[in-house]
Length: 153
Length: 144
Image 1 (cartoon, each protein chain N blue to C red):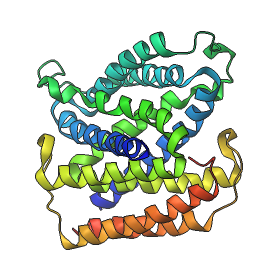
Image 2 (image 1 turned 90 degrees about the vertical axis):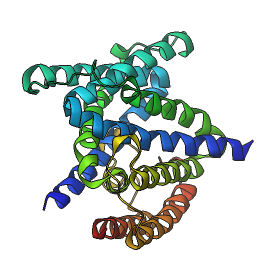
Image 3 (image 1 turned 180 degrees about the vertical axis):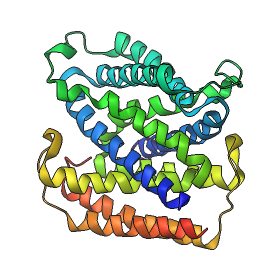
């Protein structure tokens, strides 16, 4: 039950991300990519700060206490924005989309398998490999769908 | 040149998973919202500098844009909070596949009706097949 709830949450997160990408794509076209990225992050920071003020319970550990490398998440997310801007024009949306998803999946399987960054170890089992095969097929269809419609994101 | 660019894009995708991998344990220690703030705080600082130095000099103001285009920032935290809550329970890989399923479903629904000002595109069979395989992948992942 917990598992299904979490998967549903992840799907909602993906949908939110997609709507955001659609809006930001249009905004970026009007005001420039860095300006729209800055708006996303600064509004995001404000919203999160408000939520913290009113809803976050106290924790004995704060952001100042954890090792600094744990705070580097944004350094891994921001380059993605820049890379996509540069790459999509040169290699096309279809190839770029497949390359991003390939990178995401291979790295996430590695993180799970070795328990990197303090995550729980989830070993690469037979059914996980079957899942990756399904994804490879899905990637092929995403690729050909994007290819036939070059404007798709 | 092409190959190099593709490799860089793959690295960019890997970065997204590393971000999710960092967020889960961090959220467990300091709380989900604080972990989310670390992403948006550092991200806002970084993109501020990018905007300051690399933005086109004569780009139009945010206030000349339709307000709807500016709400992307409100949706971003949903994604990051979800990453923080979900990864410790189901792992990074399954989280990423769930996110992917959400993105593809979105492209089927939003693009089909042309919601949020996107260009209207009729449902595309290839994307439906892709979604079916992604759901199958989620099923296999859930099996362990």
